[in-house]
Image 1 (tube, rainbow, N blue to C red):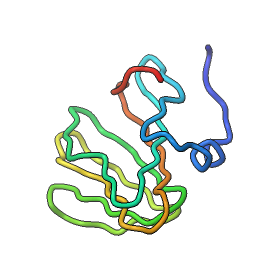
Image 2 (cartoon, rainbow, N blue to C red):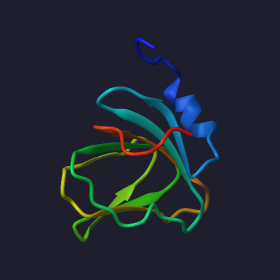
Image 3 (tube, rainbow, N blue to C red):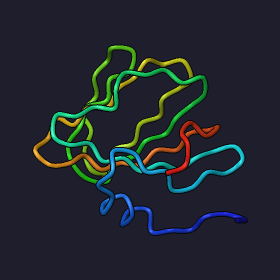
Length: 108
């Protein structure tokens, strides 16, 4: 496939999977996430940068121990080597998408 075009906001909002890979290119990957109330992605560190954007809900990003509040429209850039976690602190699912470069997860 030469590229990928979608209504990313709509796809993010209707996704109910913890993790759903939408598209994997040669050097990047687009992934949807939906975190249940109280759920988190789990503390992790990547060798390369990661971008996340919240489309709905209330969350918290923890980057090397520093906490940031997240809501609809919030964006997070996680530089390579930074320990991070995203936590749903709201009362509804936290809907977000993330871009990894290079790809991080298996398709599906």
